Image 1 (cartoon, rainbow, N blue to C red):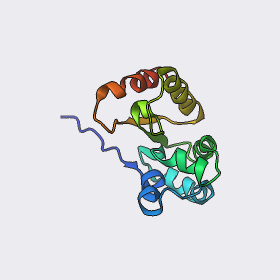
Image 2 (image 1 turned 90 degrees about the vertical axis):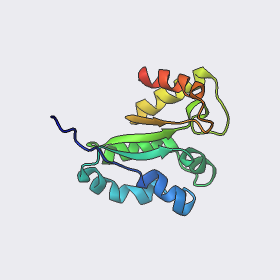
Image 3 (image 1 turned 60 degrees about the vertical axis):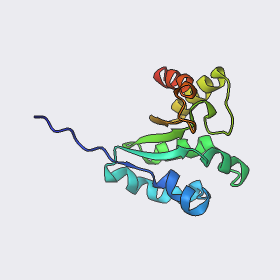
Image 4 (image 1 turned 45 degrees about the vertical axis):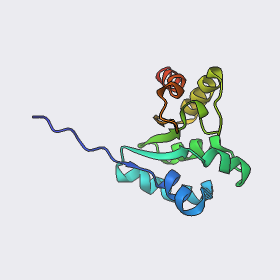
Length: 137
């Protein structure tokens, strides 16, 4: 019997500060530890998505896309993961399918390797466009 390896994903850079600090951790505070996290051997690091996009633009005056680019530079050996709210993307309403396509494509372009997709209503129809866009990345 072949044993499948356990793959560990760390969520500290997305969910850790979302729960503890209302997602207010700045990119400059993440970069010093990024290389060390890259050396741990995690399967992936969830670094983006959920409330991060909104908080970065509304409260931190940071470019969310630049965060992913910078983290990818510091962590070339670890897959970067994001939390995607299905048809809501990283927002609070449904977006058109072409917007979903463009957003997912941009995420791939800046360095997102894995998408963790959910819908708050558990309605799989709200994930269909995102799944299709991710497969096309």
